[in-house]
Length: 177
Image (cartoon, rainbow, N blue to C red):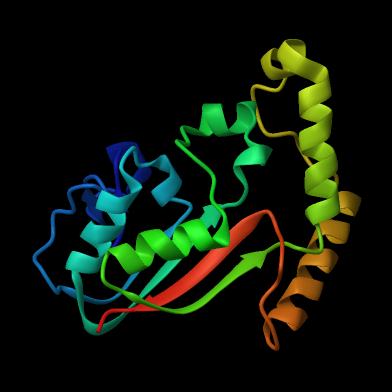
């Protein structure tokens, strides 16, 4: 089941239009809930995570991803409608505050992290002119895409064995007791 705040985000006849801060589902309706790059868009993130927990059945799993590090805030976050970025401990606190048990929490995209930091530094140095000029995500050449996908493959291999200590996103899995 797909939920989107905007009807344009849904395939006609599929999914439900609604807000993560007031889910239109009964208590304990789902065995798995996932919110990938959603919670940072909610003004009240604790309410959104509590709503996800409310519709989760006992023993069910919650999967989340959010952008990392408030210091990385940029014009991109503003255009995307973000309210905040997270550290791993901050996200864990929000999830545990909703009564869930965190099974795993890790940073992600660590192999591309140096490129991410450089890109955020470039945005800061460009200042206001850069913000106005960068109204869309830049296109990526096939060669750059291949490099980025290769670096993401490094994360894929590492994450099988350990959590990453840094990255541009955070992934979290939790269980409802």
